[in-house]
Image (cartoon, rainbow, N blue to C red; front, side, top):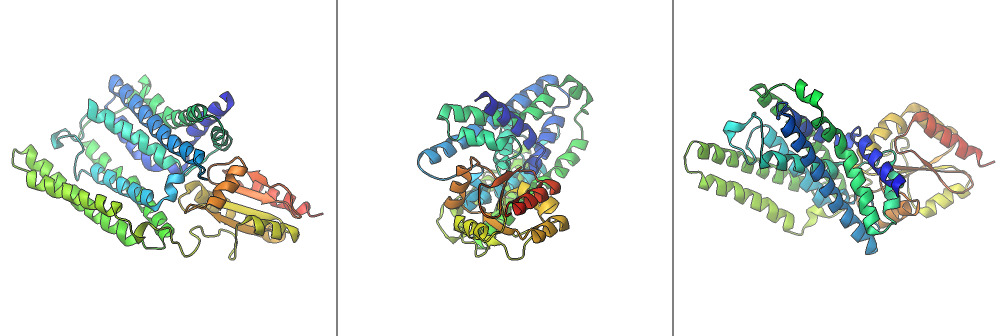
Length: 413
């Protein structure tokens, strides 16, 4: 158990270097600079960020463990297999970007924009940022995490929750440690007008994350969800603009009730659209959402296909991936789509299979669970002639992948 907790903590630390958490860096950065080097405020901000991360992780882990206890085959990042959750996260990212751009303020008067934020509003914002960091980190499963999370899912709930909490602490630890660093506090610049420009610039990583989530939704729903999310995004931007106007009128002492009600009506319409059952959120992709990196004619994964190909004397490379898995995309570009890997695939006559987990697939989730794995990416290499697969690291290198293919091909003899 202690090894699993330590592994989860280290995995959480490494997640800060993974592409999944990149969109939250802008919110982290602004959280640091807006305190203007005040050590007490920085410490409170760091603790609030840690608390938000841990609470969000425990909530996700609780749902995950409850679903598995009920017989559902679900794994790490399960919520992003739901088009509704993906659409909701995209709107959260867009709303965050509009807030950073100054279209409206959350809990603050416009006259305080760009100044040091203290009190409950700042702490609540830090906690929500920590929670958002955990939610967007779930598509990734970095080093040390696979074994720890696999162990957590077969333990009693209290042990499993402790391991997931350690993962959240690891995710939040670097930012919280910086907040407790006196040297950093001394180096941070004082608040001033320059912060407005910085705040606007930091909105663009959030918009990039929203664009990625819209692309994932398009892949999940075969374009049926695209007009829905674009319409909701337009209505959200309009509501944010109206709400910003209401705030400015209220700041000048003018009546703003009508504008506020208009903005709330727009948000209510978005909520009603999410509540209505319809085709927009049906997982109806007509083709695999994951495109092959090294084979124009990949084989759709199934245990039967693996057995068929290995019985024919071919090694098999299985890519367990998803459109929402950013680490998967990095591995595709850095390894699986390179000429060296493609040449090794052809030379060893390896069958390339894709297990696409963009949408929920109980068979894929069960196969991963049977191997003690719960998160993507997962890469398996089956030796020619059959046998147990070799599980490759979640962060691939060309040399390691090519050596695994060659070893699998030699097993034929």
